[in-house]
Amino acid sequence: MLLKTKKIKKINKQQANSEKSEGGLVKILFVTSNEGKFREVEEIGKEFGVEVRWLKMEYEEVQGDDLEEIARRSAELLSDEIRGPFFIEDSGLFIDALKGFPGPYSSYVFKTIGNDGILKVMDGVSNRKAKFRAVIAYFDGERVRTFIGEVHGEIATEKRGGMGFGFDPIFEYQGKTFAEMGEEKNEVSHRRKALDTFFGSIVGMP
Image (cartoon, rainbow, N blue to C red; front, side, top):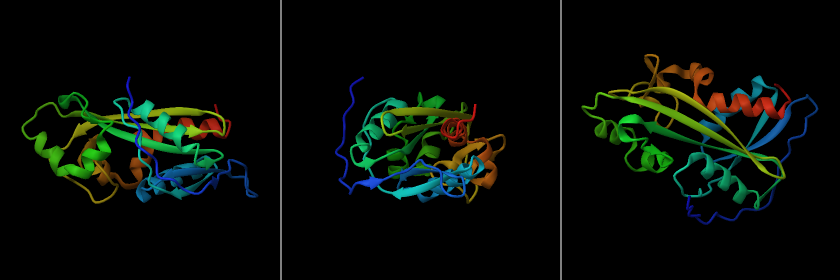
C-alpha cells in the first residue's frame, strides 16, 4: 500500500514516562488534541491503575486507506519528536452501505460535512449497519505496537443526545446513540475494547 506522509509540526522534545508513581500508578503519555477523547481515556485508565497524562498537541497523520497502518506510521514519526513511551489513538466510522466510508477518512469527513452530512447521505437507505474501529498505537521507547477494538451498531435517522463527541450522536448501539449513553459508553465502546487490551498489557495483566 502506498502511503503519503504529511509533514508533522515540530515540537520541543518531551520526556514521557511509563514508570510507577509513588502511589503505585503506571504513568503514560497520551498524545491528542481532543479533550473529550483524553477525558474518556483518562477515566478508563484509572480502572487499571494507569495515570494517563495529556500532551495536547496537533499532529498531521500519515495518509492511507488502512487505519492500523496510519496509526502505526504516525506513532513512528512522532517517536522522532517525543522522547520515551507514549501512545496515540485513531478511530474510524465504517458504514456498510457506503462500502466502509468514511473509515480512515472519518476525521476529515466530520470536519467537512459532520453528522448532518452523513445523515443526508444515508437518507432513505435501509441498510444502516455500521461499526466503529479504534486503533491504539503505543511506542514503548523502541518499537510501536498496535491494539484494536471494534463495536457494531447502526446509523441513527437523526442526531440524538448531548454527550460524547464526533459521530457519537448518530451511532446507535442497542437502542441508544453513544451521545445518549454518557458514562455507559465507556463500558462498550470500540475505544474501551482497544484500551482494555492496551492497558492490560502495560500493567502486566493477562
